[in-house]
Amino acid sequence: MKLEQLRHLIAIVEHGSLRAASRRLEVAQPALTRSVRSLERELGVDLFARQTSGMVLTAEGVRFHRRACAIANEARRAVEEVQQPGPGYEGTVSIALSIMPHLGMLPEALPVFRRSYPKVKLNITESLLPAVEGSLREGGIDFYLGAAPRLKPAPGLTLLHLCNNTRVVVCRKGHPLAGARSLKELSGAEWAVTSIDHNVEEDLEHLFGAHGLNAPRVMLRAHSALSVQVALARTDLLTMLPRQWVSFAMTQDLLDVVPVCETLPAPAIVLVRRPDLPLSPPSEFFCDVLLRSLPHV
Image (cartoon, rainbow, N blue to C red; front, side, top):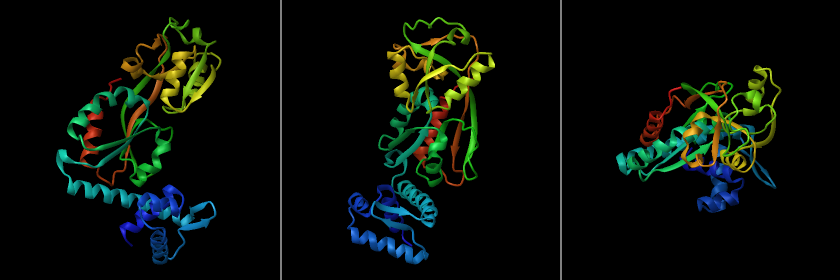
């Protein structure tokens, strides 16, 4: 079994067909076919089901692909560390952050990292843990920093509790409810929620219910922080966001915090990674500078 064969298999899965993988890798299609068939003969199983719509992994292929991704990612990191040590490092760091570290940690950490590793490429995904857990296991993402999941990750990943957090109610500048002092005053408002940071809609229902209030009317569900920002700036919708939004310079001229007296809990902030694989030097450094900006709640 050769590392090149694993890379061929991964490319076929990512691009869905031999033809697309051939173009991406700049490898002749017959050569890819021979590579995959040789790997299947060696393993004694079919890794792909050939269909008119493309190539689909078999059950055995799914399991093998997961391991192949981890091997290929670690091989890439090993080569990068040996060939390009120190500030001249030219590798890649891939991480996943929820909204809170995007707002409260990344603005301070990013320029520090860029000065120390100016040639390293960064892949930053805005997401919650469940959506990137598979990539963490396969080594495609180095670590996740953000809102704690409702369920702990399965064995194979470690979760480190970093700090607790709270939320604030956010509205546009000049909103008629900007001066409200309690959730009761907001009970007739319409709300926007985002699934990027957590299941805010469910949290809103629990929060209002705990104070004897009916569930708020959620009129917009977004899958990105940008969508929520646009909605808040141009409508009378309200939302609940991590308290770090208060000091986020890019929105200070557009959004206000509604100063309700109730405490609005938020998911704890956690760090999740594979314990059996060391982070590359730039990835470890980036994690460290992010944690320097960790808020104390």
